Image (cartoon, rainbow over all chains, first blue to last red):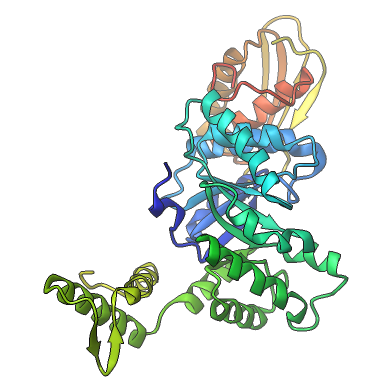
Length: 301
Length: 99
């Protein structure tokens, strides 16, 4: 069994780095993203796939990432690389795998079978390696719900905008309108399946204003976080996802009030003229967790 | 493992190390260049010899051009070069004696 805490941990910023680049492998965690995604796929040239795996293996075995989640993006299932990618990832002890170009629940099952075999081979607890899926085509997005529900290992789905836009024959110059339906479908599916949902990377690294605007958009849509390609983007994501002081105070009062009333045997009550019950607890807890991660809450909850 | 062909791994980028292995006759012939050779030369040599022993490589010419790599990067490049020299890229025995 995978603990809910591991699956539901905070993942506002998930930063890609090439598993083949020693300086990135050494320094990336210093920028404090919530997750690191060691890339064996697009960031690694075809003739360096073997070398990147050795690099990944020894990095994970030897470098202390100070609690930053360590995920690996494996090569797509139509390549000759993905099985060895899974073996090395599991053997090294990574936290989870990002399935590139996932199209269906069957793709998740295929990866899951190989992961389980690797867990057995390398003596890791069966079921311990988490999975997430990158949805990169219209078909994948339309299958978002079945993909999200495909395995108890699944913790989230992510939109991969580059390939998606290529399939849709759009350029991204329309302010994101081309991805509106996909984003909406994905976040709905993720919530229905009880997994997290992550937005695509923003590749114009000099346009930090545009990046912040897009991050605000996806936060309001209900996304849990965003894929990142540059450390400069991390602080912006964390700032956008940080709750305001009013939200933190409100969440604190809600949590305390629900607990106190529950002790008295009261399930539903009024606070500031609003009806409150246990259904508000989860949102309040999430606000406090975000506040803690953002360094904004020092209280006792 | 027996080194069959000349093979290379790594780059000359900062923090990386370029390793070349070639067939040789008598033992491990090591050549090391590094900007930090005074400080880390001995450690680089030790990692190289230990890695070759772990992989069961008895005879090889090993050329190491270091650019300030971490020990784990050096191990990765050494292993990558050796496995390339014997043409193996899959079913690597991760975590066993020979990785």
